[in-house]
Length: 221
Image (cartoon, rainbow, N blue to C red; front, side):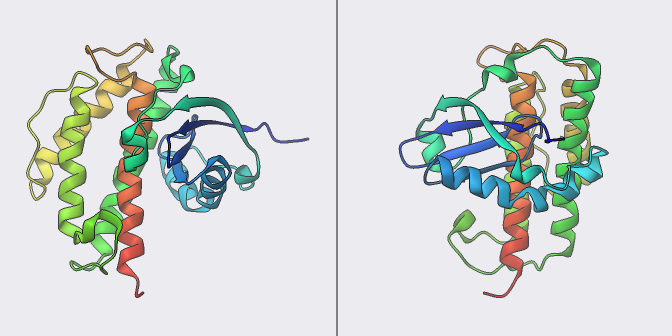
């Protein structure tokens, strides 16, 4: 029996295209065109699989061969800069309790992945174009600061914690997960906010993108 294709949204900018697996928050990659973005997404299936496993939602082993573009979204300057920015129509759908819990569990697994990677990485990372050459602690600090900003998009208003304050970081993350788990409407809870499904995708993407950056830049050139 043929596997049901994984629905993918393509966000098409002038210079960059993002491909995002709509059912798997955090599994998003980009390329210089639609084919390149889909190829990059397929290439990262193996890398994303441990995150899905950690969340309790194993990724089928051959899932990278069954990707189907179901939406094409207009990109923006943010897309070309290097971040997914467009909300897919599917992400405006209401959530069941199970769907909300699943999204939250994948975001939590992304955080756990980042924490594990950072703990095992050297303080000084190999220099390179990604992340402007930031070392490990500055990459982690950037992610945490961004999370406080993203949290406001789903109604969570908390001061950005110091990266070294593990209790405050845990409190912010718990509040974000509570908001995602409680979501039932697909509509944003804030003016100019994010639909919960998109929020989960954007947060998990940002966390994993930098976790994988730390991994890549921990290795010799």
